[in-house]
Image (cartoon, rainbow over all chains, first blue to last red; front, side, top):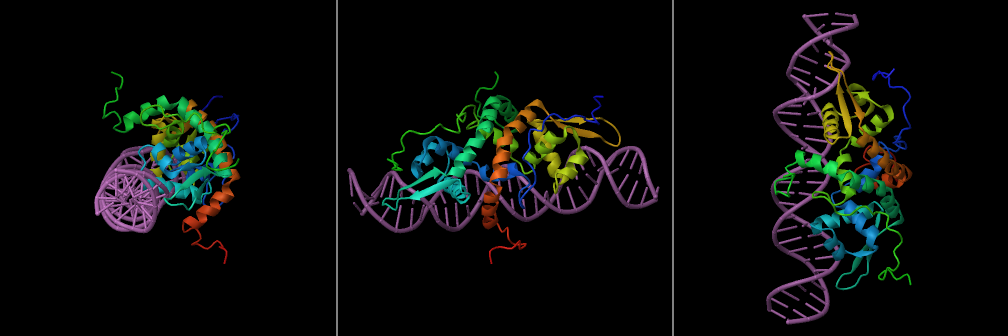
Length: 144
Length: 144
DNA sequence: ACAAGTATGCACCTTTTGGTAAGTGCCCAA
DNA sequence: TTGGGCACTTACCAAAAGGTGCATACTTGT
């Protein structure tokens, strides 16, 4: 009956919507991950979702440890993907700000469950990563 | 009133839960992305969520174009992260299967909105990617 | 005996991603 | 005149991710 090889009566599939569609994407999730993956993109999305239109410099200061090159690059990609809008006020000294588009906002909304999951299971995930990488090297007080 | 510089009365923040927490993760989303990013991981999660315990070979055939090295590697990582369980039946010829853990299943559930988003906006995303990369090289009729 | 299938491991290489440091053109303050 | 802030840009480099192909040890089928 509970023979692992037969696997009867599957409970409701959690990851539906994941049907291979357009060329280049294996599924919706794949498409999504391509636009959000990038070391700083989630953070950028996060800050823009929170703060609304944000100037470059401010964003730069908000997203800690990001370099100019990286920030610009990720912003450009997000812009090219239609997730953020860049507004250049053509002033001098330069003034530019970035905000989420409707698409970007909808993505940010879709990300909420992932944020929640990550927050809830961060301890587990963190623990496992700590061992894989040399994470405790600087000594941020492990167990002892 | 709708002066872009003043931004009054923010609507509800969509990406809450994204508060910097444990060392190594900037936010929950960051933690989540670290465990799901990997070229084949979403697909693996997808198939496991659909099919339940799946033998290596079957998975290999399901996840099209994946190589042994990659599949094994991603499975190992997913296993190390506590998302999938590997069962070795110690038979000969070898028989091993992979299934989602409770944690893996909960993640798969959290991924659903992303799948949906990706599916809904795949056309847009695909279009933009087509131009960025050399996507049209095989000639799937561009504009001209 | 030989090929094929089973689930991996390993060596080597290319591509992608991320990071550092410097420079640009413009203005303002000291 | 020097220095700083603004929003970038560029050249170069290191690290991570991904890919190819061969090897293993054992069994079944031809």
